[in-house]
Amino acid sequence: VTGSILPKGDHDWYAFEVGSQGEYEFAITDVPLELDMHARVYNAEGNAISGWLAPLRAGGEMRGKVNIPEPGHYFVEVVDGNDDARSIDTYTLTITPASGATP
Image (tube, rainbow, N blue to C red; front, side, top):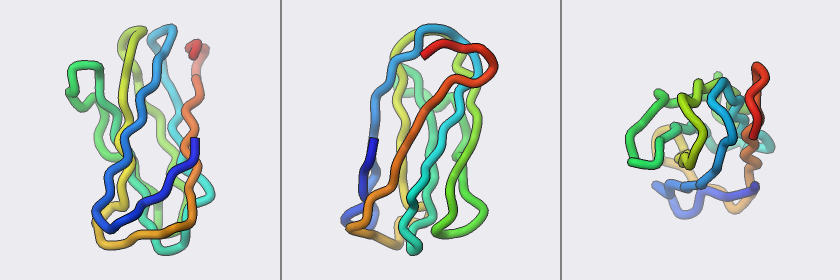
């Protein structure tokens, strides 16, 4: 999916469903140069199940893996790391199974 951080302080939320427990890779690509994209994963009850996944630098891609404990409904929050930048340009969020998990 694509999204944008607009206005400053915007927090984007995405829901996703997984068919099995396992490790999933989260990537934010096509990042506007002024944004420092971070993501955190939550379970259906709204409890964080990961720490913040962060890029090496502003404008850089964010890639990280999260162990999803069981099949079901989850959320990912996407933000500019310091809530101090915005961009009309879009980023791309992808979630893919790693280690044999099924989407």
